[in-house]
Length: 269
Image (cartoon, rainbow, N blue to C red):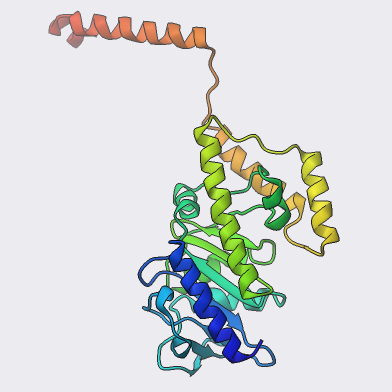
């Protein structure tokens, strides 16, 4: 793909993100590697990505310094540079704030349960990277440990991040992330998620490996899921309906006694 074609592709993906309300106002940022060079073509800062023109895009070096363009590059470019450095196979990065996926990120809930076979095949599992202040090196550092092992991330209290061998593949991963978040939310509202069993997950990952998809591995996904479940199980209490009714009745009776008792009795107690 030529630089001119890359510019047109970035404009188109920015338009799609804005049309689907994955970004609003000046949110989000995109970038691609320019083939045959050490340069990266990135979206400008402070501009709505739904109304980009090819001339607005900024060419930068591997150190993030601007080499060409009338605008400044995205203020979150450092996050993109970390991904390109850690993943030579990645040629494009998409960062957006899709509402449902970002809702999970704000709630501290990873999308790491094997609920939908298509999502297991395409993304595996989607963890949450620790919070990092936007526009700072903190944000880039927060994703560094996850980038080599995953193809999509939630950013705690911030948004979502996807990347891939082409700009279109990175964008489609963002679509899949948001679609999965919506499905997960509906499943929770309908009574709870029912993940696939481990043997079914292993079969799906075997298909991934045959297709040449290396990351993440099923073991990594299970470790993410284990941490997620461990963090919630410690706060979970199981109680029978009968015990619950008795507990409520005792509480109501105790409250009634307290309300009917004279003030002097309450002071003595």
